[in-house]
Image (tube, rainbow, N blue to C red):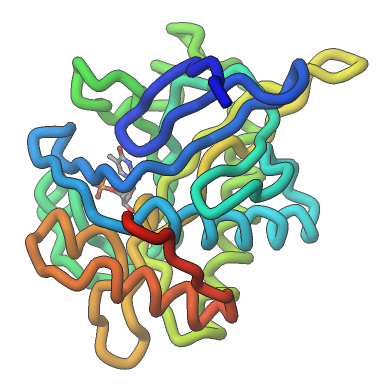
Length: 245
Ligand code: TMP
């Protein structure tokens, strides 16, 4: 079957969907870090991210979070609603790790006094810089009402996912979300429009603090597929790998 590709990103390809308003997301095995300065392909990573994300988004839907996920089509693909992406990455941090440590001199593993929400402009050429709420509203990336809704949804998502991971012996250290504008009868609605997987979350084992996320690739720790598989297993998911991947 020939399909029309709409966009190829670092870890996913978007194809035209079966009807207007729907698109197909294909999860690649490609891994990139440090604004694509480090690159590799890790066999089955895309399969695991597709599986994990297809479990977490409906779980969020069940507590009233609007999202783009429609259904998992096969090992590598899912059907999602087409949205206009808000060009902001929303990062939630419960514990200091990653870029905030070098930026603000924090120690990795330090619990933050309260969950911290940061915004980054989605712009690879600029290295996705951290921006303030005022940059977003004054420069027109999103308006105040949209940002209020994004922050409200993000806080709810963090509360829910923190508990969900706690129950399977995993600490949700931080994660990144993206939101989109979905056309509706009376205007449009802000919805979650991103995968949620160990590619865009930091997940540490509760007992050992072992990293079970993409830091295994970023920091050359090895064992990425094993770690993502362990997350899927603890979530109770049935892991099926692609032949000859
Ligand atoms: P950071 O510590 O590198 O800023 O990342 C914070 C969290 O956001 C971490 O879980 C990784 C995730 N993230 C992405 O998924 N995509 C990105 O482009 C960036 C910068 C971070």
